[in-house]
Amino acid sequence: MRARTPQPNTVFGEHLRSLRKQRKLTQEQIAEAADLGVNIVGRLERAVIAPGLVTLLKLSVALGVTVHDLLDPFTPELVAQMKLGAMSPGSRGVGVDLTRPIWTLRTPRVGRR
Image (spheres, rainbow, N blue to C red):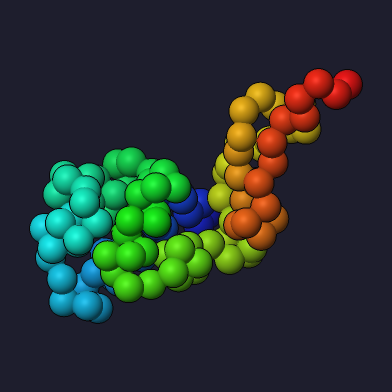
């Protein structure tokens, strides 16, 4: 039997729930501390949506952890198992290359060929 490929939203949601429960906090308490809707916290934990940068920052403050701590489960080995859309050098927009350290942002080159 093949092992299931971990999905980024699921990994993040499970980790968020674990951090919240370790601190004995409710979704409502996290939502209030992070200035987010309760439905957003629930949807993140259930892997319905993925967090944006601002949401990650708000959650880290509310939980008293760093953004790095929030993304801790995303080891290079785990990321290598995930089926993520590859970013090509010519892709448009800003993206995060999850095969490299999380702080490595790839942006398009403007005005260069």
